[in-house]
Length: 118
Image 1 (cartoon, rainbow, N blue to C red):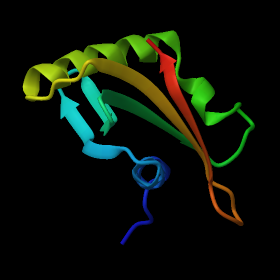
Image 2 (tube, rainbow, N blue to C red):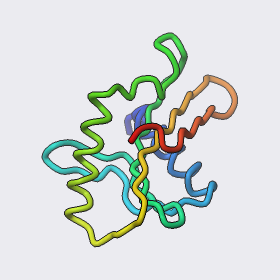
Image 3 (cartoon, rainbow, N blue to C red):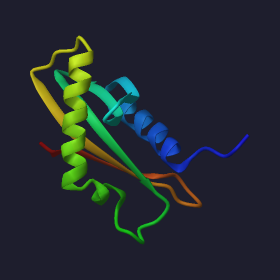
């Protein structure tokens, strides 16, 4: 069996982190023809669309830095598609980013940026 992909591993770490922080994960790796949402969760009254970025080192900057304005636009579009496909309502919609830094030794470093963009 091949080793798990880094991104899949990071998404599992992020989902566990968010669950431990009190969020309820509603969907993972939701796909439509325009792309994929990593994690959709509920945080009290807020519906949270969460982008997960995973890296093994900081050579290209912190993982969360790779969520560019173009990626943000795409996530907003995917969030609209998700909302159209699901019967979920929330007074607040939030876009979070979780950066996961996987090290050779020791636990991963997880950074959760709430309301990282709007």
